[in-house]
Length: 277
Image (cartoon, rainbow, N blue to C red; front, side):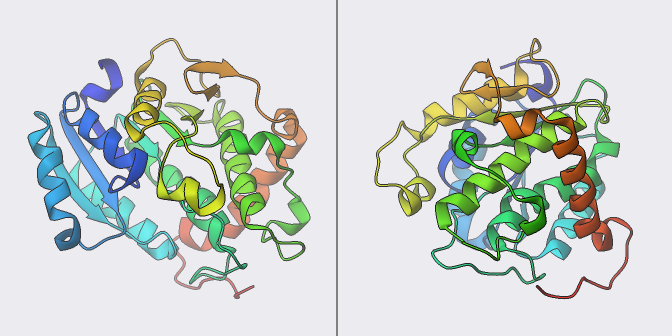
């Protein structure tokens, strides 16, 4: 692992599953690893110590609950205090679709917020700290290939299904990476890390998958392969075509417009959140 991952890396969702496995690998290559998780530091201290002992990286733990976008803003602020440069941002934090539709603390459908809105908000906040040689990695899923995102029902108020909510959120992430490839200074890619045996997988699907280390290796490939074009979608390590909806510029632009409208209170510094939905 060389290149971008030898600098400062921010990894969200780094305390379980693919994220924890990736953190162990990044500890061996990064100069500094900013490790995010939703748990109190005391609850994950043994894991943090194992990650520290796995390599030479300076490891700092940052807590944030992506069910609250104020926490995402605070996380970005903590990162900006901790460092003046982020070489790689890995948006790995995610949740399965809830069995019943649930709204976040901010009034947005919870799966969309944790998996998509929080990632976009964090990216928007941190891109100014990223060099042109940097990279944003959205951890997506091949489930997005069978999804269709209704722009008039982003909050999934009609016909909610858990697996569909998850797939829609991942489709949105891929679309964001493709759309922003021409607008961000750092490169941005999305990756399906494989069908990986994690709690998230078992919460939605009755299947077994590859090891977390397998998925982590694919994630890190997306973070450090210098030959990947910005905007690429990777199926494990292979550049692949994303869903047809993602390939429509009109869809990407309209999704971006609506996303920025949803996030406006947290992008412009306003303390007034939108009305709950």
